[in-house]
Image: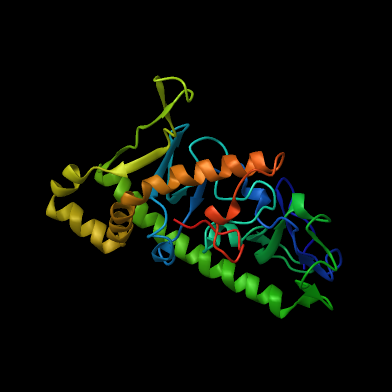
Length: 278
């Protein structure tokens, strides 16, 4: 396998450098604590549709536009779906975008090869931390990928294929013109009546505009698979109050880190599984 990839936050796994390495973090999703949006792919939306609102994220920068579909995991910069102390995910299903970390497939040259090939890589910041020799199941052993390593590669390959298809669908939603800003208003403080708009990156479907679409645009949305995202979004919107509850629970869990005042049985299942119940 190859050594490193210059100017990249990812390092291609090397049989020389990473033999016996595995990934077993003490706080499994701590890395996502500052990510306030979690991407979902079309194959997994049904697993969370009854729990949280599913929204479109649109970010415009330097003439380009990025659109994603998934969960708003907070109203600010914090991810309120990750336990602030133990790093566990607070919903019963963990999205593939989180489970893929810290691995990625990249194009790199293996030793003795002239052409780049698809290889398994790891986020550089995790090397010798959570990704280290003797940690969990080995990804590499005896100079080659283990069954665990092959499973990771297969998972990432399938995820990448799904995301590529989903992007075509999501861009057709964007081009249809049916998305409008969520315009979420929150109080400046508990004692204030003044509000401010938060999360300008979040968008929803305007049902009036959806009903007015031409037959041609509707056919495009159906052909690309975009209607699945639209339906999932609309059906999930009655769960918006659960996002606010997640924000409140996250705040109380942070307070609990300093003072043991929170009744966890009211927030989580009775089996103490650190899973939010709504």
